[in-house]
Length: 259
Image 1 (cartoon, rainbow, N blue to C red):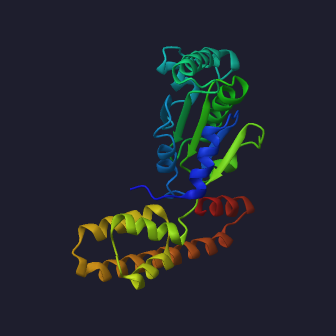
Image 2: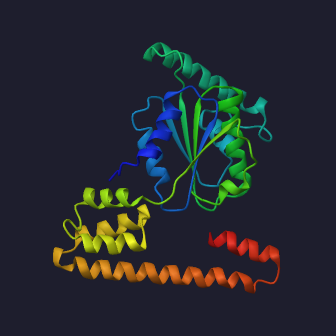
Image 3: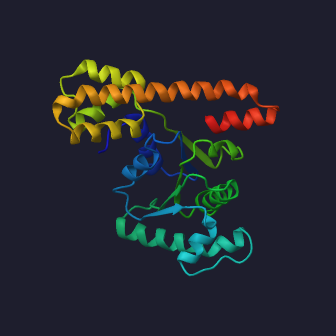
């Protein structure tokens, strides 16, 4: 179930409707709906290719192999130029079909959790080359790991960032409305919103409430709130434990992992 997120949708619309030579990088904590938002944004965009990078191979090699052009050696402009030419050919064809002189194919790449930093950097370099240097496509990169963006080199000329966090209170209520749960039970809704507005958490709660008898709503909400409070307390304890690390490096790595 899609919940309208006006600021997020405006950002995607501005990127997809206007000529751009930047890579749109979508980042944020796990469970905030980044992949859902990106897929929703391109659902009606003609000429979109969707690729999931699992860490088994570099994006540059994965794309070239997919079109029958194995990557020889490491990522270079020369090795990627055949892919850029294919995107340019698709753009010329699409402009004639759609009657739009600025039309470009769109490449949406999602990077799964726990992908090595080297693969993430390769994906960013590949997309920056295709979108900015070759101007052959639009490129959207979804980082499933919220910390992955910290390892990227600053490059404002070729990157456009969209940070996604939790729902606002209005969006959280809209999500429950869409699922038709806790209708008319404002006190229970306040208790839920008081502990989380994370999209993934609310979706799980809505699924549980939808599958249960209406009379059990209060019990389900109580268990959900208690679980979230316990989770928050454990995270605070873990954060405080960072001070027990022996070195500044250990403390920093521990703190970053917890974030």
